[in-house]
Length: 52
Image (cartoon, rainbow, N blue to C red; front, side, top):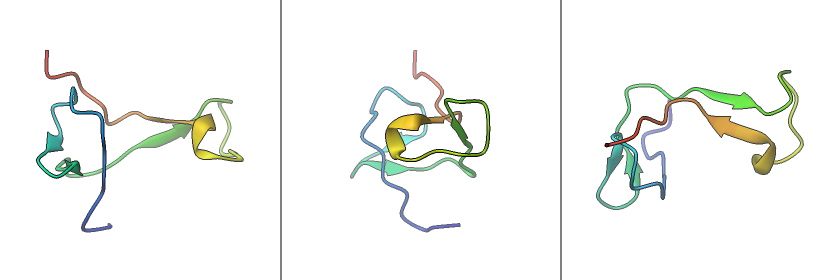
């Protein structure tokens, strides 16, 4: 897995200083419900968990 996963969503409990993601793994899915996406806007990070 990549050492430096960047994330700007500071409301996520996995967010760390320097816009780093400190989750042990990352799960990303396509908006379309398939394994195909044409750009990043067609994907969602399922690893996100709210700090609240």
